[in-house]
Amino acid sequence: MGEKDTLSMEYLSDNTRFADICNYCLFDGQEVIRAEDLKELDTKEFLKLAGLNQKGQQISRIRDILKHAVIRSTGDCTYLIIGVENQTQIHYAMPVRGMIYDALNYGRQVNTISKNHRDKSDLKEPAEFLSGFTAEDHLTPVVTITVYWGSEPWDAPRSLHEMFHSNNALLKYVADYKLNLISPAEITDFEKFRTSVGLVLEVMKHQDSRQSLNAIFARQTFIDNLELDAAKVIEGFTGIKMDHNEEKEGLNMCKAWIDQYKFGVREGELRKIIEISIKQLCRNINVADTAEMLGETEDMIQRIYSAAELYAPDYDVDKIYAELQKEESV
Image 1 (cartoon, rainbow, N blue to C red):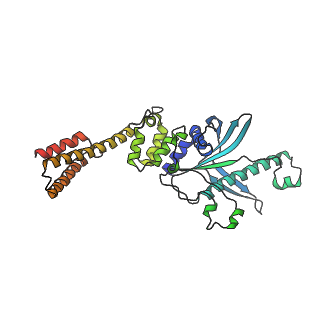
Image 2 (image 1 turned 135 degrees about the horizontal axis):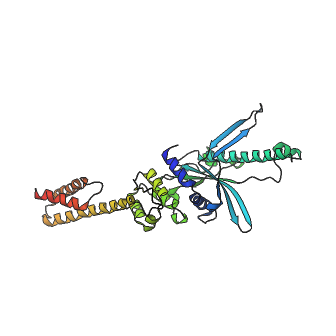
Image 3 (image 1 turned 120 degrees about the vertical axis):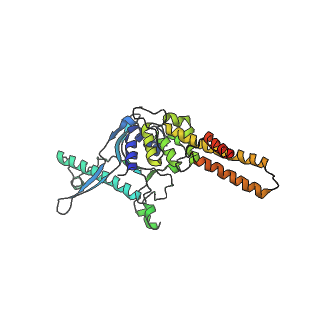
């Protein structure tokens, strides 16, 4: 398992964040599933199938996260098993992968119920002996949510039917399997998240845009609400270094994010320096001599950038001015 997979899995294993992901995907952000109603389950999905030699064969897969959920409403409780699969890369066979996870869980549920009946010796009808299941038995629904952590649009199939070569009339007889996908590029309202998950996914969506990131970093709500675990995930996925303080609980903002914002401000100031310099140059040059003006302007721009490169990536404006003044005095 890679570093990104580990980071995302540990981050979403927290019940509060897990509930947030589920509520966004299943209930459009409404707080239906609560952290206190979640219980950790074994992530190993396995199913033992009896073979002709009666020895059987076991099929197993390891999920990222699996939890048992209780959805409480007035006078009623709904039980649900929810799995979350984290994808750092687009997976073009994800519907099949998710379908196998869910099928293994259902198969294990049937086997568990059948074993309980055998232990109690309470199966009566031939059909019950055949299936190990009675008409009164029920399965617990299984839902798998795929969380994609990339900024690119998800261009892979979102259902089993989309993976077939053609969409002919026979497909109506082929069972479909739908992918429950969360992709940052498709999220338009990050306010539907109630935890730092929304902030993290928003950064994932805009990680390739310096301008968008600067706007996010400048928001006071972002600065106040980004916790250490979320900061680690962002650092791991984007490569932007964070100023961790392991002893602080609930960072009142990582210094590095503010530095990133200031970096954008300095870039804007550098552009202003160039504009002011060109205007000043034009006032001092005979505008009629266009060729000479252009040549001098290009030379000035190059001088400013050369001075700026000495202080990259901070682009200290005062130092750049000082460097230009040194050149003028030579």
